[in-house]
Length: 227
Image (cartoon, rainbow, N blue to C red; front, side, top):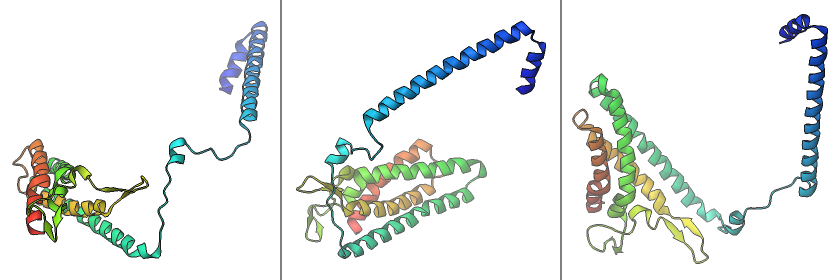
């Protein structure tokens, strides 16, 4: 840039150079005036708002308060939740193992399709287990140690009763959310096993439909009858 400037100056005549300097001086003065105006506006705003400090809470944030208390008696339940979450995550890694087995068994050209199929099947099993599967398999109502209708539950469709509403209006999560997660991990593993034998023999959309039906209806029927 400096070299170009020197070249321009060397080629420009004396009159042209004076005109160029005058234009630059005028431009610099106008920019300084604009900066001074912006600084004046900023100073007025700072004076009106006062010194910097913590912002007041939003209306929603201020209206919602949580008064739950923690005691050492809750430690066993907390450790149980952590342990079950860890077990669920480890069970989810079975999906990676099934994917590796299938890619080793089937032809190389279908490797990408097999991996996508397994991932999509796991997502479809989430939807099926959340909408109907968990409710049919594990929810009540119960009559003693058995379901009231002797067959299936119907109290937790689409996550119903996963949250508990207190008399003070507060909504807190229940242990059913944890139970849903750990049981879905095993449901997804069963789904992966079921569709492993139809690789290269079923369309992608068909595998998604089967995964949803298996997770939402077939697997829950077996679970409700045996567990």
